[in-house]
Amino acid sequence: MSECIFCRIVRGEIPCRKVYEDEDMLAFHDINPWAPVHVLIIPKQHIVSLATADASNQAVLGKILARTGDIARSQGLNDGFRTVINSGRIGNQEVYHLHLHILGGPEPLGGSLKPMTKK
Ligand code: 5GP
Ligand code: ZN
Image 1 (spheres, rainbow, N blue to C red):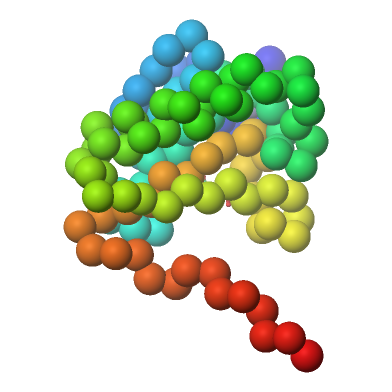
Image 2 (image 1 turned 60 degrees about the vertical axis):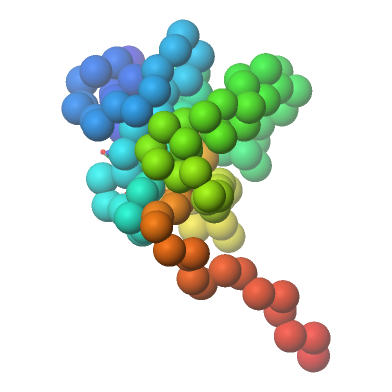
């Protein structure tokens, strides 16, 4: 059995505040939110990262993106949201089970990434 924390959430061994679930994917509130609304969507299958995903993961990754808007709206995000997928060391990925962050709230989010200044 995988010790991966998100696999344990999928198996119900660790509780979560569930937002959406079907046979392929699970969405739940982040335990340490970065924004007033912060939901994670994960594939139930253990995919390490977007950096290692390949064509065999195409169906579930497409499904996650196609469901993101509905899941965001179900949490009151009717006027937009931000999505983030951190990948690997450079991306500061902390949990190595692929997850998409949905971030939003009543006010526009700050701190958007800016183009790096050319040297
Ligand atoms: P990353 O930095 O890998 O993109 O994001 C990992 C996210 O998972 C973090 O925002 C962190 O708060 C969240 N997280 C880590 N452990 C748990 C947990 O046990 N339950 C929930 N709901 N979120 C978690
Ligand atoms: Zn996992």
